[in-house]
Amino acid sequence: MKSWWWGIGVGLLVSSCQLGTRWQMVQGDRFQVNFPGTPQQEQRTLETGVGEVATQAWGVNRPRGSYAVVFTDYDQPVVRLAHSPLVWEQLKAQAQQRVQGRVTQERQVTLGNHPGREMIVTIPPERLTGGGVAKVQFYFVGQRVYGLYAIVPQEHQQDLAPFFDSFQVTNNPVPAPAN
Image 1: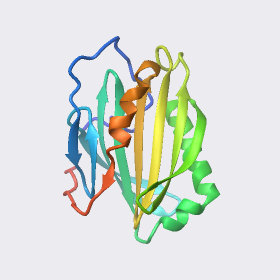
Image 2: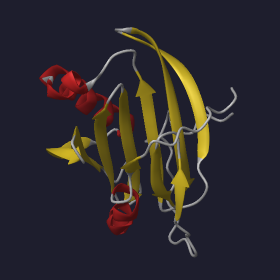
Image 3: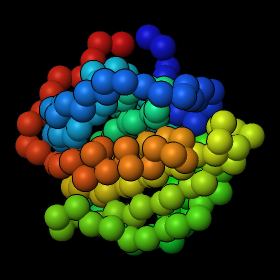
Image 4: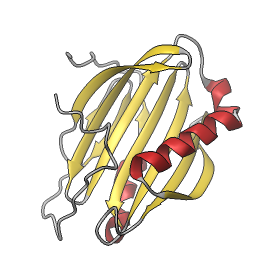
């Protein structure tokens, strides 16, 4: 399967218009969110400082932007990580590297009573025609970390709201995709 989300900031070519984008509520594995189309699913195992972790991603690439929900389950609660400055610095560096931009805004956010962080990354015109914006949110929920990612051209920043405002944690597990 094509690894679309691993290079979420690489090679996003933006056309001048896209007609008829239909947003749809998608039920994921213990989450739901509006996507501008039917998302692809992918699962990978990554080697980290705490050992191997399984990561799942759901995402859509469109001419007006790319959207993804990525999550990782750990064998212990992750809420304590939400309060670690080192974790946030690593996530910030990772976000800047993936989209080759600069974090211009950063703030704490919550999803219900779950702590999180939001970052806005400005993408220069040499990386994305006309320049762009990447918005990233991370939430620490039980033993899971959710990452929400969206990259849009500068003139389509209003398209970020239907995605980020719709994200909810649910209790509905969905089987993992086959490798």
